[in-house]
Image (tube, rainbow over all chains, first blue to last red; front, side):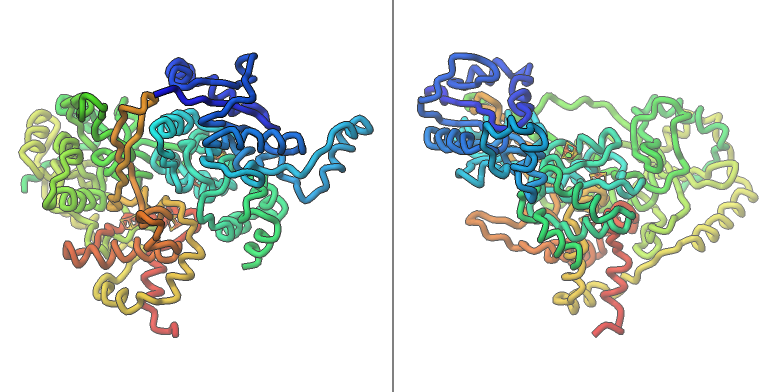
Length: 259
Length: 342
Ligand code: SF4
Ligand code: SF4
Ligand code: SF4
Ligand code: SF4
């Protein structure tokens, strides 16, 4: 079998997910050995950006019309498109303030110079193209990436956990910081896969992997309200990483709060 | 049953003698308020004044995740490198947790014996320890506040000493190996034990009525209570992970990068997870969270009774203490029973 042709791309993001790929130190040789990498600008020059691809990995959020064009071009050339990282999957931190007109931010940050490029409200890949596999995380988890690639090579989609971070937190037997200390942990509504990385250090889960399927946001809001957090704090916390996710849009949250 | 006495100041010495029988695991502190069973390095690290550990003993015999076998396209199947024959001793196990092991033994020792479970189970000695209940414990209601068997030794605290019940010949060997540390039980010890037993019985703060609960649950199958519970519950899985008798697992394959070899994994699963009752074709038998929470209660308090003659809940209080949403099994049962509701 020919090695699958692969392209690895970054839109607007911190490049952290691409870095995770490069950081697969022990597996890197096996990884590049099993793939025919046609484009990975962060790691090598001489990219072939015209060829047909078996798999495209795309990091980052779409924030410019140019990126939308690039993404659509990648989609057209690729049999499978994998969104890597919470920005690509849910919009990430760039999308946390989409209710404000982006032109305002451009002005504030770049002054008159900002007029040279056009921006649109930051959106995840799925707002523009069909995504075949989503690997969330800020950044993605190396293990999930490798399992994902292995499954794709085999012709399957990987089976990703579809339960909350709390499950992994308890599997690893970390004390619950929400119950013990009343800290605003988002583990109950965040999708697992990181092994409860933050609670393992005694820190709250900030929801960087995005919402779990069948999220009960109303109950999480209730818990945080009972612990004394303000509505503004709660909203900001819930909307840091995945604001475009339907259960976390402002109207849904307002309804959940009053339910 | 043979009963001897171990003065508390001899405990450290006894623990050293026990090392000859295997690696000692005992309750130790984790975080500010929690405890876990972990390998005991120094006798001083032992925390016998604990109420419950985050995870129960199932973690030793049915680990959260394990490789059942490796596979390779040409070679076929291969069990993972033989687990060592290392024996271990789990020290300081409370009665509810011993009962939970008896329940797991029943389940995994049924018609199709689970070799993975028993290969580990047979290597572990259990040394029990009595306890004083806190507000979450309701083991008196579930009949699991005391054990007659299921341990090699069982220690009961009588102020300055432990009364040590010998449950198995292995336990007897342990006592014999530390012969000089033990003393005979005196009349005063006996009186102290009885006094303590009464005190302990009076210190239960929580109870549920289990008699006719299965019938009540059948009658309340369509109750609004399950809807309300589904709204409160986050489906986070915590209660299932920490429950000593939640034993569901998922089995799946993980592939290596060569896409021709991999591992068959088993990992804890829970009926609270969205995908638990999802079948081929996309139908989900329990798509609603409320139906999933209901299932957990029904299996513990209703289904298990039909199958094994007793509920699988041992009243350890873990699900209540660790639930982020404060879902309280006692409250649920009381609500189901309450007559004032229309
Ligand atoms: S610490 Fe956070 S992730 Fe862990 S069980 Fe508690 S709420 Fe869940
Ligand atoms: S615990 Fe939460 S914030 Fe931390 S890595 Fe996992 S999902 Fe992200
Ligand atoms: S611990 Fe509580 S919130 Fe989490 S699944 Fe169990 S009942 Fe629901
Ligand atoms: S249902 Fe709750 S109280 Fe009963 S055994 Fe499980 S964790 Fe303990």
